[in-house]
Image (spheres, helix red, strand yellow):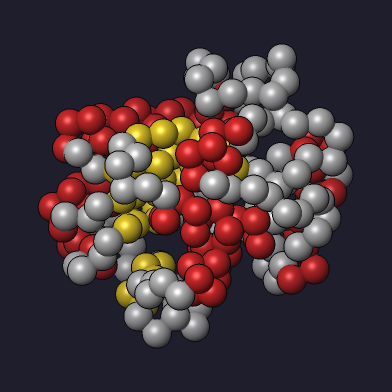
Length: 234
């Protein structure tokens, strides 16, 4: 997802600073650090206008050793670091897993109540609530993006190929890059919103992306499996 976001923003002409736990991209301005390290995160925030926060353990995992430091402490470090650095906008990655318990009616809209079914989804609920209070208490512009299934590697794409629901919430790397451009460039007076971001569904829309279109100007171009040909091996 990070590579998709960086690719879209760079193609649009934005200057991008990368922050990752390891060297993994050709970005010139890149910092290697851990999201749970507040000092490293604060350093990365210097001179930044907008933060696209994607660093996290990306699915259900051990809570004390993985989700707590990466998805809770890391969230705190990013939000507080952005606030102290005077960042104007945060694009915060969430997930459809915050509404995993819903079985319809389709499509699910951003205003439907939370229904997580694991610790990962529960941690993302906290992220969404924290985003809301940072927007309204501290005045940051925060866009919460409930991202669809963007395969991390070929094995992850193969898993999606076997999942009929997954194909309807697929988010191609190309559409992901275009979405993050729209989120970063959205009107400055947009204080807070929650939107779904997916490519076009194969069978039926599972997540309602109307808000992403109306508030951010995002319009997906791809449908599964378009865009998977460029996904790398794990």
